[in-house]
Image 1: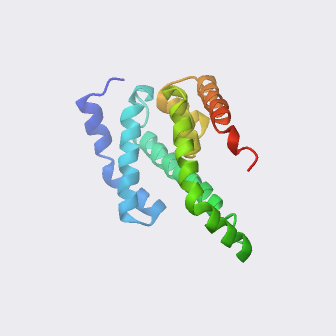
Image 2: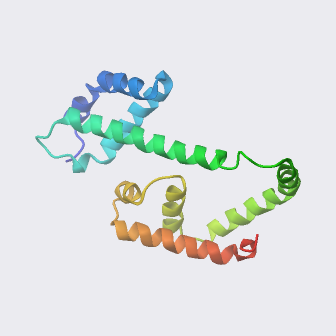
Image 3: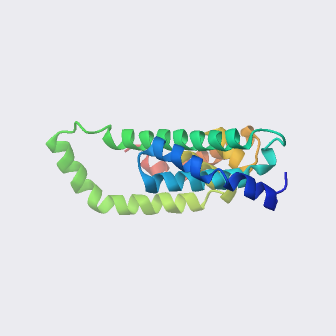
Amino acid sequence: MHLTLNFNTEIYKYRAPLYEKAVFYTRDEATAADLVQDTFVKAFRFADSFQLGSNVRAWLFTILKNTFYNDYRRDQKRAAVITADDEVSNAQLHHSAHENRGSAKFIMEDIQRALLCVPEESRYCFCRYFEGYKYHEIAEELNLPLGTVKTRIHVARELLKKQLKAYRSR
Protein backbone atom coordinates (compact mmCIF):
# COMPACT_ATOMS: atom_id res chain seq x y z
CA MET A 1 0.00 0.00 0.00
CA HIS A 2 1.35 3.41 -0.84
CA LEU A 3 0.98 6.06 1.78
CA THR A 4 -1.85 8.27 0.71
CA LEU A 5 -3.67 11.17 2.23
CA ASN A 6 -6.62 8.81 2.72
CA PHE A 7 -4.44 6.36 4.69
CA ASN A 8 -3.04 9.19 6.83
CA THR A 9 -6.52 10.53 7.53
CA GLU A 10 -7.85 7.04 8.27
CA ILE A 11 -5.23 6.19 10.89
CA TYR A 12 -5.14 9.68 12.43
CA LYS A 13 -8.79 9.51 13.43
CA TYR A 14 -7.81 6.77 15.92
CA ARG A 15 -5.36 9.03 17.74
CA ALA A 16 -7.65 9.73 20.72
CA PRO A 17 -8.68 6.10 21.38
CA LEU A 18 -5.06 4.98 20.95
CA TYR A 19 -3.98 7.63 23.45
CA GLU A 20 -6.61 6.48 25.96
CA LYS A 21 -5.41 2.89 25.68
CA ALA A 22 -1.78 4.02 25.94
CA VAL A 23 -2.57 5.91 29.17
CA PHE A 24 -4.23 2.75 30.47
CA TYR A 25 -1.07 0.75 29.70
CA THR A 26 1.55 3.25 30.85
CA ARG A 27 -0.27 5.15 33.61
CA ASP A 28 1.63 8.25 32.45
CA GLU A 29 0.43 10.85 29.94
CA ALA A 30 3.86 11.75 28.54
CA THR A 31 4.84 8.10 28.08
CA ALA A 32 1.44 7.43 26.54
CA ALA A 33 1.96 10.23 24.01
CA ASP A 34 5.35 8.72 23.10
CA LEU A 35 3.76 5.29 22.73
CA VAL A 36 1.11 6.64 20.36
CA GLN A 37 3.77 8.44 18.35
CA ASP A 38 5.79 5.20 18.11
CA THR A 39 2.63 3.42 16.99
CA PHE A 40 2.09 5.90 14.17
CA VAL A 41 5.73 5.70 13.12
CA LYS A 42 5.46 1.91 12.90
CA ALA A 43 2.15 2.17 11.07
CA PHE A 44 3.75 4.38 8.43
CA ARG A 45 6.87 2.21 8.28
CA PHE A 46 4.88 -0.98 7.81
CA ALA A 47 2.01 0.44 5.76
CA ASP A 48 2.93 -1.87 2.89
CA SER A 49 2.14 -4.87 5.09
CA PHE A 50 -1.38 -3.61 5.86
CA GLN A 51 -3.99 -5.73 4.10
CA LEU A 52 -6.54 -3.61 2.27
CA GLY A 53 -10.01 -4.30 3.63
CA SER A 54 -8.62 -5.23 7.06
CA ASN A 55 -9.67 -3.49 10.24
CA VAL A 56 -7.39 -0.43 10.55
CA ARG A 57 -8.40 0.14 14.15
CA ALA A 58 -7.49 -3.41 15.19
CA TRP A 59 -4.20 -3.18 13.28
CA LEU A 60 -3.24 0.07 15.05
CA PHE A 61 -4.22 -1.25 18.48
CA THR A 62 -2.15 -4.38 17.86
CA ILE A 63 0.86 -2.22 16.98
CA LEU A 64 0.27 -0.14 20.15
CA LYS A 65 -0.02 -3.23 22.36
CA ASN A 66 3.03 -4.97 20.86
CA THR A 67 5.12 -1.81 21.11
CA PHE A 68 4.15 -1.39 24.76
CA TYR A 69 4.92 -5.02 25.62
CA ASN A 70 8.24 -4.98 23.76
CA ASP A 71 9.28 -1.76 25.49
CA TYR A 72 8.19 -3.19 28.84
CA ARG A 73 10.21 -6.40 28.32
CA ARG A 74 13.23 -4.38 27.22
CA ASP A 75 12.96 -2.18 30.33
CA GLN A 76 12.62 -5.26 32.55
CA LYS A 77 15.77 -6.74 31.02
CA ARG A 78 17.68 -3.55 31.70
CA ALA A 79 16.36 -3.37 35.27
CA ALA A 80 17.33 -7.00 35.87
CA VAL A 81 20.87 -6.32 34.71
CA ILE A 82 21.16 -3.31 36.97
CA THR A 83 19.68 -5.02 40.04
CA ALA A 84 21.24 -8.48 39.56
CA ASP A 85 24.22 -7.51 41.71
CA ASP A 86 22.31 -5.91 44.57
CA GLU A 87 23.83 -8.24 47.17
CA VAL A 88 27.47 -7.25 46.89
CA SER A 89 29.80 -7.07 49.87
CA ASN A 90 31.49 -3.86 50.98
CA ALA A 91 34.88 -5.26 49.98
CA GLN A 92 33.62 -5.98 46.47
CA LEU A 93 32.13 -2.51 46.20
CA HIS A 94 35.36 -0.88 47.34
CA HIS A 95 37.45 -2.89 44.86
CA SER A 96 34.91 -2.31 42.09
CA ALA A 97 34.74 1.46 42.66
CA HIS A 98 38.51 1.77 42.84
CA GLU A 99 39.09 -0.38 39.74
CA ASN A 100 36.32 1.22 37.68
CA ARG A 101 37.30 4.86 38.10
CA GLY A 102 40.17 4.81 35.66
CA SER A 103 39.71 1.60 33.75
CA ALA A 104 36.03 2.03 32.84
CA LYS A 105 36.85 4.98 30.60
CA PHE A 106 39.54 3.04 28.77
CA ILE A 107 37.40 -0.07 28.47
CA MET A 108 34.54 1.97 26.98
CA GLU A 109 36.90 3.58 24.50
CA ASP A 110 38.17 0.12 23.48
CA ILE A 111 34.61 -1.10 22.99
CA GLN A 112 33.72 1.91 20.88
CA ARG A 113 36.86 1.43 18.76
CA ALA A 114 36.05 -2.25 18.35
CA LEU A 115 32.50 -1.42 17.25
CA LEU A 116 33.89 0.87 14.56
CA CYS A 117 35.73 -2.14 13.10
CA VAL A 118 32.42 -3.93 12.57
CA PRO A 119 30.76 -3.27 9.18
CA GLU A 120 27.86 -0.82 9.50
CA GLU A 121 25.15 -3.33 8.54
CA SER A 122 26.32 -5.83 11.17
CA ARG A 123 26.98 -3.11 13.76
CA TYR A 124 23.45 -1.71 13.43
CA CYS A 125 21.84 -5.15 13.83
CA PHE A 126 24.11 -5.95 16.80
CA CYS A 127 23.36 -2.63 18.53
CA ARG A 128 19.60 -3.08 18.08
CA TYR A 129 19.86 -6.60 19.51
CA PHE A 130 21.97 -5.30 22.40
CA GLU A 131 19.28 -2.66 23.07
CA GLY A 132 16.81 -5.50 23.62
CA TYR A 133 15.13 -5.89 20.26
CA LYS A 134 14.37 -9.44 19.16
CA TYR A 135 15.70 -10.90 15.92
CA HIS A 136 12.30 -10.76 14.21
CA GLU A 137 11.77 -7.12 15.25
CA ILE A 138 15.10 -6.13 13.70
CA ALA A 139 14.26 -8.13 10.57
CA GLU A 140 10.91 -6.34 10.27
CA GLU A 141 12.46 -2.93 10.88
CA LEU A 142 15.11 -3.44 8.19
CA ASN A 143 12.90 -5.49 5.89
CA LEU A 144 15.45 -8.32 5.90
CA PRO A 145 15.16 -12.10 6.19
CA LEU A 146 15.51 -13.40 9.76
CA GLY A 147 18.59 -15.44 8.82
CA THR A 148 20.35 -12.35 7.49
CA VAL A 149 19.80 -10.52 10.78
CA LYS A 150 21.10 -13.50 12.78
CA THR A 151 24.17 -13.74 10.53
CA ARG A 152 24.93 -10.04 10.87
CA ILE A 153 24.69 -10.22 14.66
CA HIS A 154 26.92 -13.31 14.68
CA VAL A 155 29.50 -11.55 12.48
CA ALA A 156 29.50 -8.54 14.81
CA ARG A 157 29.97 -10.76 17.87
CA GLU A 158 32.88 -12.61 16.30
CA LEU A 159 34.61 -9.40 15.24
CA LEU A 160 34.09 -7.88 18.68
CA LYS A 161 35.50 -11.01 20.34
CA LYS A 162 38.63 -10.68 18.21
CA GLN A 163 38.98 -6.97 18.88
CA LEU A 164 38.40 -7.32 22.62
CA LYS A 165 40.27 -10.58 23.28
CA ALA A 166 42.51 -8.81 25.80
CA TYR A 167 39.47 -8.59 28.12
CA ARG A 168 38.58 -12.31 28.00
CA SER A 169 40.59 -13.24 31.09
CA ARG A 170 38.93 -10.53 33.24
